[in-house]
Every structure is written in structure tokens, then in C-alpha cells.
Length: 302
Image (cartoon, rainbow, N blue to C red):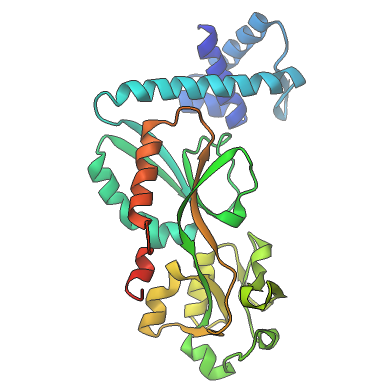
């Protein structure tokens, strides 16, 4: 095996966390993968991995070498995709989205994208957990601007994320509606466990005043909070992309409408690459084209 192939294999082993997982992904045997990594270590003259019964870990030299191997793997993949675009776009596009946005807004768009690029394959994961684009080989992740802590990624704005406080009519009928933000302390407010800072409800029209809310129900995704609010469990702060239709239909009631909630942006993030893969570029352009201007969930009311 040539050096470049061994470097790509080494990056896959480290990123998957084991010889066996890398072997399954590459349809090789674990012993063959381990043997090639041994040949690579002989070739470069240093130990790259510590091997124990508990698994593998990078040596100091291996950690530095791993970044170079990742770069080689990306360049090879980009070169292959650039050649492929001389004909039709091919390959797999790996996308991660927050659960609520993915179900409400992204999934309905994907058939049109696949119709436009029929030889592309989409791999979509819906999750609200933090995602490491490079380590998990993710091409594009849909996130909110306040979630981005990695300075090495690029964020492309898709749409504004406007939030409102709301509850089901049954909850309001039973417990009444808060008249001021301070009244929320006497209400059952629904909380998120994935991003605890989102349980600090910020009111921009009051100088960014923050209120920590609490209640007897919390969940790990906004999608779960949304369904709990519809069921009358309590008061929620949710994005309009998720609740606008319910507000219009009367399934949810907007509360504290004269108080402005903290807003952010819905963004598509991707790795900072010198040569962006064509499959990523067309997907980003597709998303931006759909969400440009007034976002679709706001258009009827605009």
C-alpha cells in the first residue's frame, strides 16, 4: 500500500476509534488494517498508536501526524469529487441537523434536491448533541448561531430564528396567561437538557434581561418540548419555524407578545476547506435559495 493510502487508513482508524470499526467501514479484516498501520509506523519511524486491551490511543507524534493524514484524506476525496463533476454529481453527502428543524423544515425539501441530483446519496442524522465535523466526517450541519464554538468552521446563514413564548389553549384556560416575564416564575415552563443556556429566557426589549425558568418537564430536543407544549404540559419558548402553523390554527397561543425574545440565526456550518467539494457547494446553494429573504414559515404572515 502506498503512503497516501496508509495515511488515509490511519485517519479512518483514529476517527472511528478502533481497527475493527475502520475495517468494517472499508470492508477489510481488522488484522489487515492493523498490519497496514504497523507498516506505516515502520515507514515513518515512530510509534503512532498506543495499543492496549482497552483500545487504541494516539501518541504525541501520532496526534500531530493524524492532522496531516486528515488533510490528505480530504484532498483525495475532493479530487475524486472534482473529477466526478465532469459528469453528474456523485457520492454521499453526510448531513446533520437539529431534530426539530430537520423534521419540520429540512426533510420536506430533500426530495426536490435528490430529483435535481439523482446520483447523489444523502446520509442524514437528526440530533441536538454537539457535532465534530471533521472527526465524524460530516459535510454540512444545520445549527443555530449561538451553538457555534469552533472557530475553524464556516457558518452560512440560512434564515433568522425568531422565538416566541407559547402554550396550548388548555394550559392557558387552566392556569391563566402570564402578563409579565416575572409571572413565568409561577408557571410550569418546559426545559431543554441539551443546551441548558436555552433555559435562560432573554428579553431583548428589556436590555437583554435574562430569566431562568423551571418546571416539572424537560427533554433533550426542541421537538419533544414542542409536542409537550401541544399536549398542554406547560409553557415553552420555541422557534417560529416550528410553531407558526400551530399559532395560526389556534393549537398554540402566543404569550407575552409585547415582549421581544432573543433571536438568532439558523446556519449551515461546514469545515474550512480551501476547495469546497462540489456536492457541498450545490447543497448549500440549494438551502440558501430556498430560505432566502422572508423564511417560508413566515411568508403567509409577512
